[in-house]
Image (cartoon, rainbow, N blue to C red):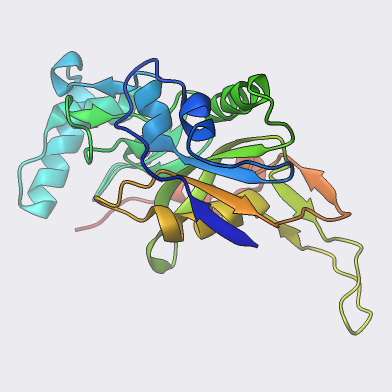
Length: 256
């Protein structure tokens, strides 16, 4: 597999056509996978905001005050309110905010970003990233670029490990995972549990090139990767019923 960054993309503005901008700067062939950072998708979709737009509720004030007490630094209750507004469920409210977004992704602060937002206070995640990926893919098809999958990526941390890595939050043109159950290992043993999240793995690989901070390379083309002759699935986010970690978090309380 080869990874190729899409270079010289401009600062995105609301209404910008990501498919057109990428098509003008990259060669895309059938079977390629285009990964696009959620930051530019959000900017193109006008998902920027200012904190003054968020009337603060009593709960937001309580959350900010408690985190401020523990962290020893001032916390803006308007930011807490923005997180609440973008969340389907708040799993942890102290010492940081861990939220489920309205499209099912679980991440700190509902994925709200304060970095690289030149004209506003905060950048929200796309409302429906899979729909965003579908629109970008359709835009490529309108330009005669067929059979290219699109993944919208974000970065977040992982339980039990330090550091962040790229993850998929939306995708189109390929399944989210491939199912190895029923296949055989080299010793002939049948695999009974292995389902590989290929969209996450491609997002993480692309993140090695997109980088963090001021790198400014928000799109990457993965070439030479093949899904293979395996069953696929679009199940990526666990249902509450079989998510033991989420169930435990609902009963957990932070003790200072």
